[in-house]
Image 1 (cartoon, rainbow, N blue to C red):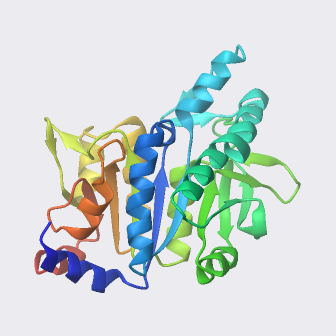
Image 2: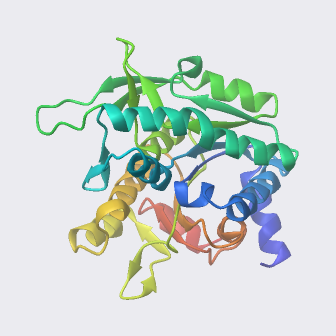
Length: 284
């Protein structure tokens, strides 16, 4: 990356909020997780405030199988029965979050874990069973971001796990991409980054580096993005339509892909923007 372009983006993003989401593939490897956390530390040291949301799908699958339970998914979404919920609470409310924080401690980063239950961060409903029964899956009604702003004000990096609780006290599993999208929209994030295990949206072996919402919708319509990637693109479009300036899908398994995406114009993954933002980006 050229230093001039890096300095341009450092100046552009200083004081802004980024919401980043990492999946279980990233958390599973300490070396990969460390690489991303070092990138986050770099952003933080340059005045960019970061909220980190984590998932843990592969770990939930593995633990479920160890317990003799076969997880079920529909259209990339996990159906959460009673056993699945217990697995989610053990992982998302415990071990995975702790693994991230312990590595942050080694890197001298001030991480603090927050779930949707903490500080009244999320108001959620149990998803309606009218069309399909997803079990103990929640939908976000409202984000109450004050706890995140308070933590960031004092230099902490909030680490958000994908759990919430209904007004009736029912703990629910929530898609981590969805939580990242809802938070990013409410805090008016400059960027939202969804890490996955591929370079971004691919078509015929080629990386689609920039997509407007119109183009992203076409990619879904043509069946280029299916399953989990379709869900990610839908969340990306929701975020930019709600005011998140730029949203990115990156390969979390590729070292320093975050800095490559943030500090260079070419980027390292797929960026989703509003149609009118494309002209601004092309002139940078």
